[in-house]
Length: 221
Image (cartoon, one colour):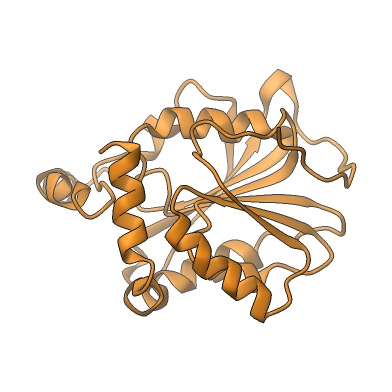
């Protein structure tokens, strides 16, 4: 996949995404946001915000920035934020692998159903680490291949087909995390059939564990 194809695929999905995928994936989104326990003034980035289904779930005492490559999906998200009066949310069209935010702009970065839907997941993960402060949290909600050889064989076999509709099935969590500063703090299985992983990581870049939240807004340039 390349960026133009990904943008085209998801823009084509925009008008039907909520009806087709919304219910299937929504339990995972709810679990991800509910378990964040977002603090007042916390700066949250949602990567691949799509049509903004998760945006109403965030408390109004934090600031939420959503980015997506697809302007078609963002149109739906903009409409949702306007209708529901989500004044603490701002939206930008942006490539997750080349974000226009300064380093350490966010306390928490959430990526739901993203890393297996991008052409280069390593650049996306590297950018999430860069824009997340040291000691901050990076939340990955995704299907990751597991150690079951039979399931792994099926996942690998159908992966080329899945790529045509915008995601891959054969990516393992350890491949996503290897060589990064991310340390897994919690991992749960969510959604129907417990097929998706909800993984909370601590961003330990520069040897950090936890750092205080300064409550400032992110900067783009």
